[in-house]
Image (cartoon, rainbow, N blue to C red; front, side, top):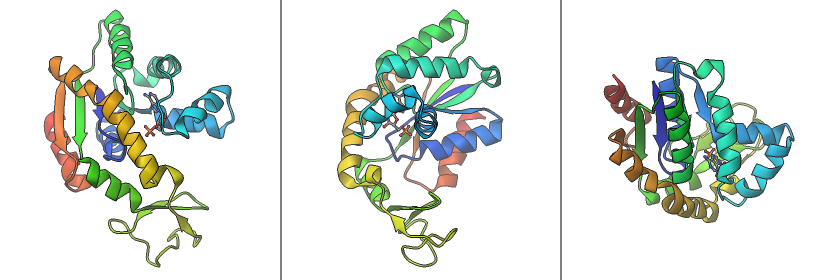
Length: 213
Ligand code: AMP
C-alpha cells in the first residue's frame, strides 16, 4: 500500500503517518526528516536545504525529488510506504507519478488531514520545546507538570523560531499557494480521502483506518 499524507504544516499529518506505519508495517518516508538528518550530519544536501527551510520556503523540486526517489527505491519500500511532506508541489507529484508509472505502479491513497488555519496558528503558538532534549509539549493540550520546565530532563522550555506566529503564517502561505493544488490533483485521480483533523488524535486515526481497511 502506497499512501500520501496531505495537509497544512501542523495539521498532525506526521503523527498520523507514524500511527499508520506502525499499524500496517510500512516505512515512514518524511522529506523533512531526511533534510533535518542531513543538516545534523553537516552534508552538502543539508547545507543547501537549510537555506530554504530556515525561511519557511520549499527546497527546490529538483533536489527534493532526487532524494525522495532514491529513498523509495530502497528495499524496505518494496511493499509500500507512507509519504509525509512529499509531494508539496504539482511538479513533484508529476515526477512521482511518472516514476511509479514506469514501474507499473501507483499511489493508492492521498489522505488530506483538514485543519483550518486559525486552529493551526493556535496549536503551533502553544507548542513548547525543551532547549536540552528537544521534547515537545503544548501549553493547553500537552502541558508539563511544572510550567515552563521539561518533564523529562528538568531544563527550560522555549517557543521555537519555526513555531512563532510570523513563521507559521509564512509556512501557511507557502502551503496554500504551492501545496493545496494537490488536493484537486489527487481528487481528479479518484484517490483523495479527506479526514477532519480537528478531532482528537485517536479519532483522526480511527477515521483513517476506516478508509484504509
Ligand atoms: P516538514 O518537516 O515536512 O514540515 O518539512 C520541513 C521543511 O523542509 C519545509 O518547510 C521545507 O522547507 C522542507 N521540505 C520538506 N519536504 C519538502 C518537499 N517535498 N518539497 C520542498 N521542501 C520540502
